[in-house]
Length: 207
Image (cartoon, rainbow, N blue to C red; front, side, top):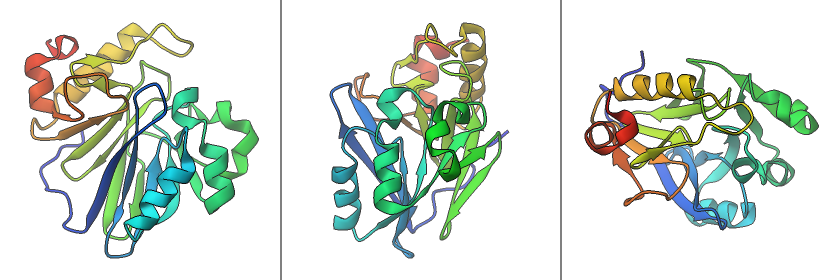
């Protein structure tokens, strides 16, 4: 099981951006030394995201999807058009993106993406959707719609499964408590949390 025994690399570039009208968070993750980064869940306003990366002296070279619900991927075609980036999506979700199949790289549990010295590890956490995944980089965990601050994603949409989601939440609860949690939506009382805080306060993490 992936643990967070190491601190994030000193050259880590990590930025949380609020976009759209559904409280979505988009993330830029990369290496300040190589000036390259990935966009997590490109949606709503890709131009604004790319401008932010450029302002920070970074070039977007990849896309990552935590899952393929519309509010997390409606900008993926624009991202590909503007950057030519490959997009990393779990193998169980790729079937929903046949229109951009040639630009997809399918991931599975334990798959990795390395940009410069920054290594991102993909954790398969199904339940919200069958191919939902979290991204761990050092002591930081992007949880998409699997885990929110004080809540979790719904499981009554196509591909959702309550029992599977509970198993995924149990898995996240077993990780290092110091892991910083960055969710897919601004639904909680803070924009970020930790695994330890969620274990103590999130009713869906109290097992």
